[in-house]
Length: 329
Image (cartoon, rainbow, N blue to C red; front, side, top):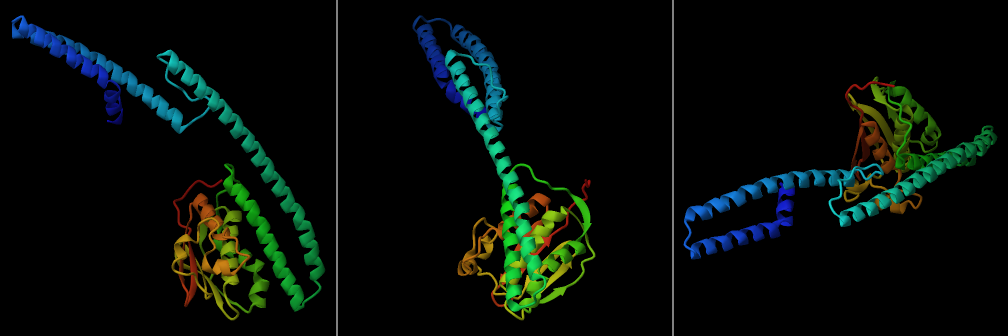
């Protein structure tokens, strides 16, 4: 209906001209006292011819509009444009082709630079692991409060490095997702084991209930999500608190803490990029990227994620790992 309205608007001048001619002929036929049938016959002939021309023109106009909308939706270099019907249209299409070529060149250049940037960060990530591993090795023989604090800061450095790399990979078009069916418990235990020293040092109790659940996911990315959630739980839980990892119902994994909670006005926005909220502003080191990355990864993996919080009892993050059976790779 939109095409028809646009066509009528474009040819309203022609329609008015035809109506004017009909009026002139009617007046002339009346003045010369010609039979009314002649007037009606002439009007019917011109009306029939006008309808045929109108219909043919409208069908051509609609096809042309559809091609233009398709080219606008998918603006590629090989986008098909309608045949120009006049010299101005031909010039416009030349301009469009030139812009498409320029945009394509910019896009190719951007992709190449972005790929180089990701490769550089990947190399840097692997390189920085060497001095981190050396520091860990030097601290392995010590068991003091200071050495445990240093190890905790090293773990935080590793998280920030992984977060930077995750941001780059998620913002790009290509990802390394490999969906397979995994046992969930080994993934959870791997995440818990990474933060075991923090649980001990901060005297935070871990209440872990085996899930005995199989999930179709990407192990590396789901592990990243779980580690981010546990890291946040430890960050905002005071000494003597509890972090609970359990399956609320089949496919719904919950990670709950007894920390300071999230302000009600901040809860709807905690998954936004860069949003830190009241507690994050108190913690000057908060980046506002952790939960944003979790949401993006869960969306890409087909998992759901939501948060509930009460400043009196803490925060619970729930991962919906249910999904239809897909072909694994």
